[in-house]
Amino acid sequence: MLVDWNGSHPGYHVLFFTNGAYLGTATSKYYGYTTVLGKTRNTVSVQYRWVKPQDALCCPSGGPNVVTYTLTDNTVRAKGEFPPDPDK
Picture 1: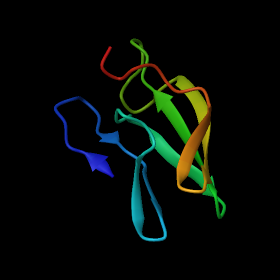
Picture 2: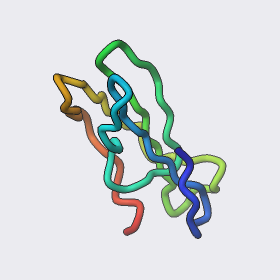
Picture 3: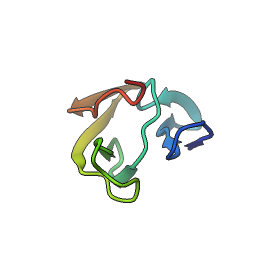
Picture 4: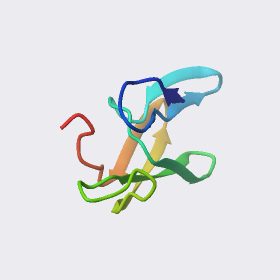
């Protein structure tokens, strides 16, 4: 989901559903440069990149960090390193 915000690059949320029920977002904050790399029946791998101070907006050099989300019952758990807080 694209997040409308006043920043210089749009942010994205990854939303989770199971059997038609909404479970929530992958993270509490939105991140720019977010890509879903792949999925299985119960996992989703998401790549996060971020802009460093010297970067042009087209070319983030932060990351990539990959976080794998696993669904067990109705709970999603994350494994991997998240990018820095986008609000700091």
